[in-house]
Length: 213
Ligand code: SAM
Image (cartoon, rainbow, N blue to C red):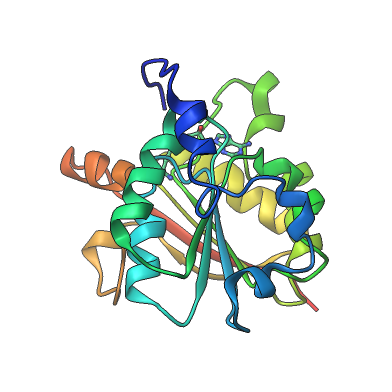
């Protein structure tokens, strides 16, 4: 996702420590304390402008959501949405999704969402794909046994790569959708990219994959 550079973005993030967590490593192993309850924690890695995670938080008050985004000029837009949502069960983290083990204890995250992750189509960039085995290793550590990744994309190449990556890692493909919007699927929350690409007629691929016991 490319956005104009926003020189003011850093200050805006710093002005909202209640939403964009400062010193997130201090909350490792204590996220339930931060949310003030025992509810499950679902994170979205690469949450972009935050539409999905804000809407999920509004719809599911019994789940705590953390949106993770690496780009300053993008997470600042997610911040505006998160503040407008006025929900207590949403936090944002300005970190690289590959470093989740620095910020979450083993098994502390109950589910990971990956939505329309950057495809990095060149082979030499494969390690940057959020479904590469290096990322899966980190996700496995922060999820419990039988923890799930829910992944959506319109990019067929990335989807095929990800199915192979999950399966080579020993994950179980619980369910696969090849055209999500053409079937009954209760409660789908659309992301910004999902709205854009489905409007252009692209099929939306989805998979739920589980780390086995
Ligand atoms: N999920 C949103 C959606 O579906 O509309 C945004 C999709 S956009 C194509 C991918 C986002 O992932 C970008 O905002 C990018 O900055 C972010 N991203 C890419 N690599 C990341 C990483 N390693 N950690 C956190 N965010 C990352």
